[in-house]
Length: 113
Length: 109
Image (cartoon, chains in turn brown, orange):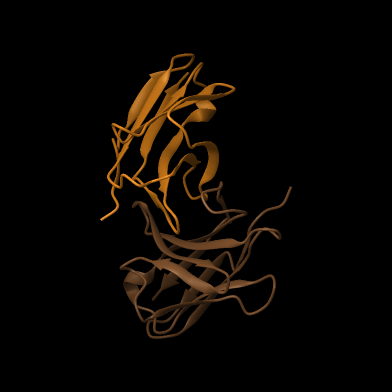
């Protein structure tokens, strides 16, 4: 069964460092998303991406964040200068059509020390 | 502001009972509605989607949507201990999908 794959599963980084979280969406999907979930809190929308551009972003997705689809399979989230409060689970999701069902990867746990 | 509200719970039901989970949303133009299940430390897992007013049944799960009242619900019949998890309501628009805070369900044997 096709699935969304995220790497790494866990990343520890020092405050101020750049991190890149990677996702391989389901192959025929066209819409891609990043979410984060701080421990014990809700799943928060960060950004949606379609046709090689950002469709929508939340107030969380500030200039420290960027997304890219560098090739036909990967979808990345970059945090330029990490802060302690960026520590969270980051989930990638994809869907085949707008308003369709979205499927999530297993997540990357980011710990900023 | 696109808000999705759920009772945080915890909701506790005995094995075999019906669990009822509720969700309201603020954005009237929302077009797609989903229920996800999340086990501790895991990613959200899709249970059901619903797009039209009324009921949609899938096995032990029934989703109900009332767009006029901006209300979505999920009924779990014959609840099992393995259903114990946090249930997330998600509401979608053209370019995003927003989650409620989730309701923690415990099914007691």
